Image: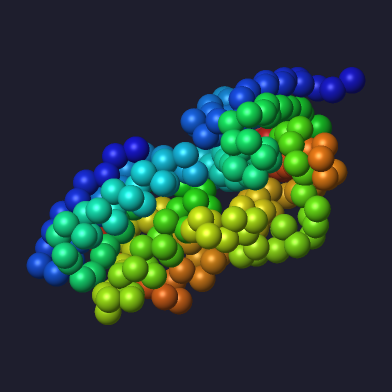
Length: 107
Length: 146
C-alpha cells in the first residue's frame, strides 16, 4: 500500500495504490488526517487509480474523511475507481454525498 | 468425499487478511475464473476474515481462524471461514446493511452486504461463546470448449 499526497490550491489529492483492507485502513486514516491538518486544505480528492483491491474498510475510511472535510465546508471527490471499488462504495451510498470523476483513460 | 479439499489455519491477526486473500486467490485461480470473479471471491473472503479478526475474539489477536476450501461442482466453490470466539447473538441484525458491532470505530457495517453481493450464497451460523462459521459459495461462469 502506497499513498502519495499532492496539494493543488485548496485541495489535497490523496493518490492511493495497492490493497486496502482493515489492516491498513487505520494507518491511512491517520496519515490522511495528519496531512489535512498540516496542509490546511479545504477540499479532498481520493484517487483510486492504483488500487488493486479494496474491501468494505475503504467505505469507512472515505466516509470518515468526508465527515471531517464536510464539517469545515469542504468537498470530497472520488476519482478513477475500478468497477468493483466503485460498486463497493456505491453500496453504502457514498456517491450521494460525493462527486465522482474519471481523469485517466481506462486501461 | 470432499473434492479438492484444502484447509489452512492461522492466527486472528490483521496482517493475515492479506494471507487469506492470497490463499483463496491461488485456490480459485485453478478454476480459471474471470478477473472479476476472482476479485469478488477475494473481497468476500477479506470481509469474512476481517469480521473474524475484528469481532470474533474478545482479546484481539488471541485466537485462530480456520479457512476451508472445497469444490462442490466443477464450477462451484465453497469457502468456509470459522472462528472459535464469542459468536454473534443476533445474526439477522448483524447482517443488516450499516449494522456495526463497533460503531465508534468508523466501520461501514457493509461487510455482510458485500459478501452477499459478490457471492451466490452466504450462510452464517453462530453460537454465543462458541464461535462463528461463515460459508461462502460462488458459482463461476464456465465456458466450455466448443
